[in-house]
Image (tube, rainbow, N blue to C red; front, side):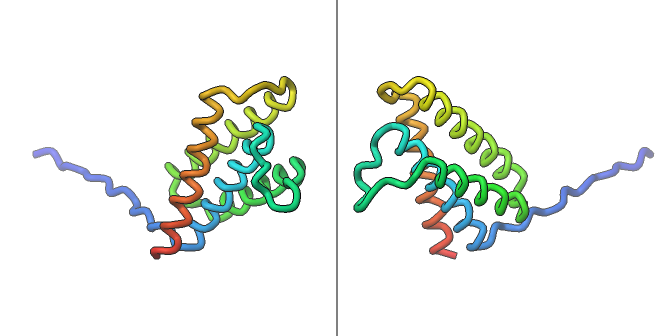
Length: 124
């Protein structure tokens, strides 16, 4: 009789509240970057943040998340969203125009993810 071998996957640890907070902060920073290049940053009380400051903040937050290495599936999505934001910001700076429906939808997605991770951190 042939022996059956079952490989057990290493169980993933559920993210802890601080990881959810980091993810929330990153997504809201990415959202702010798109909000700024779309010309929608008028809601800031005093003045909108500088684009370079937001880019540096997003890089710093991304590096912090990479060091903590959350769930690989989450990390893959985060990397894709980060890169997509960078590409959209760069193309918007090169050729400023009215935001496309795709850009507006992605901006809403970033905001919603930031708020969702923030809510999850608060519940933990």
